[in-house]
Every structure is written in structure tokens, then in C-alpha cells.
Image (cartoon, rainbow, N blue to C red):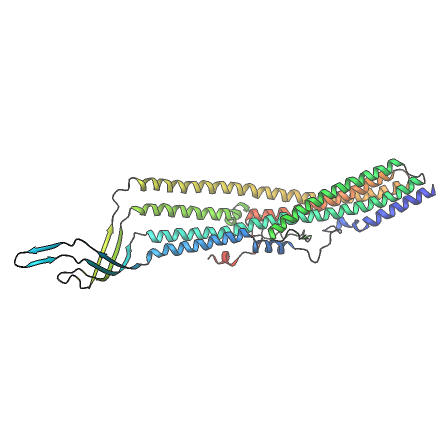
Length: 457
């Protein structure tokens, strides 16, 4: 009997040593099993690396460069066009005119030479160029806003990946501690069975628990490796790298409005801002179509030299031409009518799209808020659960020491403590992630805004 009590005391001592550092867990913000690696990535650092070199950002930036070129192209309508032409032609037969008593006259030379500089300038186009420039400027603003939208989406994707890794890293450490405790326990149970103080059932039951935890650990490792591969893809790292993330569960709640959250979101969300610019573009396009049937006044001028002037047909002489051209559309086969109808339909479609976007944002906003509130409530519940689990473990220790429960009952209490710690950690992670999701739903930047957006250029 003394040997049995002694063996039980050894088991208890080993288990308590593994969990003594977690007794004060309920009073701390983070589980003590998680230690920040000095080489690990912070969330801010990770987001900065992602949005600095991600191809989708570079692709969006090229769209801005393309838009700048289109603005410059639209402005070229204000500038004149000039070119130089030179021609040589040989004609035959050449027309000749014979007049009695005066002889024969050649009307054109066989070899004709000409060279000229030509100048063309639109004098007045009834606002076509101005409207086109405004249209391309709005298009550029959409592309600039799209860059920030892509950055925001990548940032939110990074946040989700980051906190998933935080959870998986911590979960694996908890499973490692469980395995260490179970293996230590198995060694002592096997010694107890050798002395007749424990049964084979207790040994086999402990081995089953070890196998179960090992299987869970394998699944967690597979999930963690998948998340690391995803993070490497976001960062542009080689897949051979194994990034480690810091445990950052404190999130700043400043910037989140307590009232009028919908108005705040509609004022800041990229989707709303882009739709507003799309409506402006559609209205400009409608105005451009209206101008298609307006007259066009142009100046043309040309100066050069050519031969073929009577009476010295082969002598090259200077010449010029200057004038105004007026183009007035009379009938376009109803094209303008249907183009106007199409442009008006585009304005209406974007208005409906804008309304749909606002409904989606409203749903995202209240959904994110609901998840944040739920995660906050879970923290207090699991905090209490951990306290109760620790107390239950303490009672199980007393009961096991007095011989009223088996070592398997003690392991159940042990497992409850580990599971409670894991669930509390998950609720804290869910709470932090839900705050970021709420910030994104409100349109608050999860990254540092670029000078391009701040300047509005």
C-alpha cells in the first residue's frame, strides 16, 4: 500500500511540474506556453512585407501608369499635328495643246516634284477633348483607389493567415506538453503494473490517449505547414522557409466609431468610393456621346514647293494653302441615339451596383461586430472554464492520493485543463482577428497608406 501511495505521489509531482506554470493563466492576458521568437514576424512587419512586393500590387500600379498615359493621350487633342510630305511622279502621255500661229503648248511636265510641310489644328470641338480628359482622370482615380483596395484585401488575408499560425503554433506546443505528461505517466503506470499496483487496462488506455494526441498533433502540423506555405506565397519567400509568427493578441480598438458605423463605413470603404467614381465616369461617358454630333472646326495649312506652273513647267516654285474646315454631322444612321441609350443604361446599372455594394457592406459590418462580441463573451467563459478545470484537477489530485479515483480519472482532469487552455487561446485569437475584420468592414486601413493616396494625386 505504501508503494502504491508513493507511486501515485510521483505521478502527481510530474504532472504538476508540467502545469504549475499555468496555474496563474486565468489572471494573465496570454498563455505562458507561447514565447515570442526573436526571429519571428510581427503582424505589422508581415503586412508591410506582403504589400511591398506582392505582384497584385505591382499589377494595380501598372494600371495607374497606363491611366497616366491615357490622360496624356487625351490631352494631345489640344496640340497641332504637323508632317512633311515629298512626292515624285512621272506622267505619260502628257497633254499638249496646239494653237494655230502660236505653236504647241505642253500643259503638264513629264516629271513632277513636290514637297510640303502640313499643319492641322482643331480650333473648336465643343468640349470633346475636355470631357475626354475628365473621363481619363476619373479612370486614373479608380485605379489609384484600386491599389488601396488590393492592399486592404491582402492585409486582411495576411491577418487571417497570421492568427491561424499563432493558434496552430500554440496548439502544437500544448499537444507536446500533453504528450510529455502522458509518456511520463505511462512509464510510471507500467512500473505500477509490474508491482501489481495498476492493471493492463490502465496501461492500454494511456497508450490510446497518447495515440490520439499524436494523431491530433500530426493534423495540426499539416495545417501549420499549409498555412506557412500560404504565408510564404504572400511574402514571396521560397517555400523551403518556415516562418514563425509572434503572439500578438492585443489589438487597438481606437478608430472604431461607437455610433453611425454604417455612415462611417460608406464614407471610407474602397468599394463605395470606387462606385462613386464609376458613376461619375458613366455620366462623363454619357456627356461624351452627346457631343459626338456636334460640329468640328479645324485649321489646315500647308507650305512647300513644286513644279508644273505655266509657263515654265519644270521650274520649282514655292506654294501654300491655308483654310478652315467645318464638319457638321447630319445623319449618323441612329447610332448616336442608341449610344446615348446604352450610356444612360450604364449610369443606372452602376447606381444599382452601388446600392448592392452598400447592402453587402452593411451585412459584413454587423456580421463582424457580432463575431467580435461573441468572441469577447467566449473569453470570459473559457477563462472561467480554465479556472474550474484547474480547481477540478486539484480536487482530482486529492482524490487520487486518497485512492478514490484511478489514474485515468486524473488524466481526464489533466486533459480538461489542456483543452480549456486551448479554447481560451482560440477565443482570444478569434477576438483579435474579429477586431481586424471589423476594422476592414469599416474601411479603416490595416496598413500604412501610401503617399499616392494621401496626396490624392
